[in-house]
Image 1 (cartoon, rainbow, N blue to C red):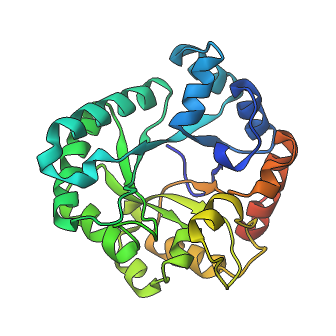
Image 2 (image 1 turned 45 degrees about the vertical axis):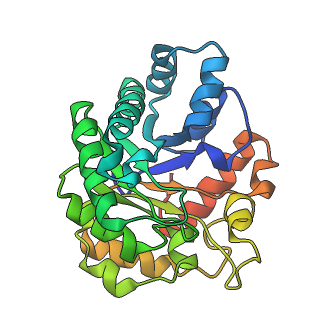
Length: 273
């Protein structure tokens, strides 16, 4: 299992390339892991790679798949049990075959019944546990789970040991940071931290901003030092992912993009390769 000292490269932050080249760029720039979307998985399959082939590339480079993204049916609650079970089993099976231990859980819907979401998460966690997976709930400011105050009760009330939070610094900043609440959450429940940066003034369209205009860590106004300090105090255990969704960064060759992401993250974290 990766630790806070381990850096993870989010494949959505760098240029498109064959799977082996993506993994190689991560390793060459000191990343212990990668996270990827299902679209990246589908691209690798389209290259002709099987799950076994992808796992061989990861293992050969000594890079772990830190998280596969994502499942959504859980947020609809127990009335959607069959869909929750089917989707969770399918995605967690892939994650397990690729060597991951974590699957992202989000909703893209504008409204969510939080109590029903907690019940749905519990169902999904029970399925995920059979595949050796944890589920990390991430809040997105434009959805029905817009902030930490909404996400944490879902994880808490699901009452499952393999339920946790994925904390994205950009979403934390744009949703209105709540350091006091974060300090009350057990560190072991923050299973994945994603860092990037942003200017103080949000763009007119925050969805467009989060997809294409994030900044490298240390280049904006997010108080990453405070966020890291709180998480250190509470004892977070998950890895640190660099998730800089930026048209500018993706415009660089993949090796250069990975280098820029690694150097910026290490500068903020105060670590070296």
